[in-house]
Length: 137
Image (cartoon, rainbow, N blue to C red; front, side, top):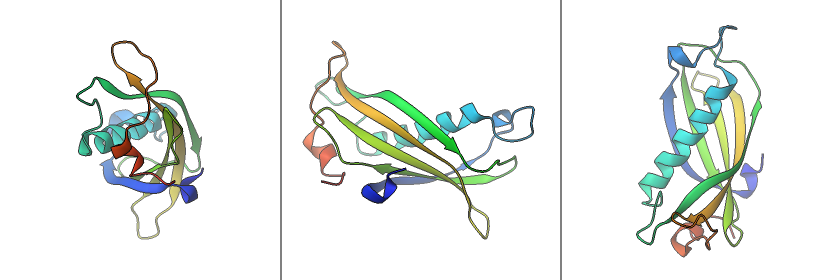
């Protein structure tokens, strides 16, 4: 993960839901993508960037997750979101999921490539300047 070349833009805590568990007794792999999505959406909402007045906004082009340690209910997780260096129409985000125990451990990390698009046409648009200012150069 490239979080060392990125800016921490959002952090939040999340309680694992019982429905996040799988038959093996730990958080299902698909739940981590929901955690990443929730964190990205809350960050974008906090900076009024989910959809701009001109009808532009981000969509996920690619997403991945690396699972490091299993985690089970009940637990509270800390999710950290980093934004990387933007291209003309896209930017990477990196996510980390940590336990909140006395000795926190990283349990997963992920990456998503976001493309800024016009909502009506679906065509890529330049990443807006207000968003670029939050990212490394």
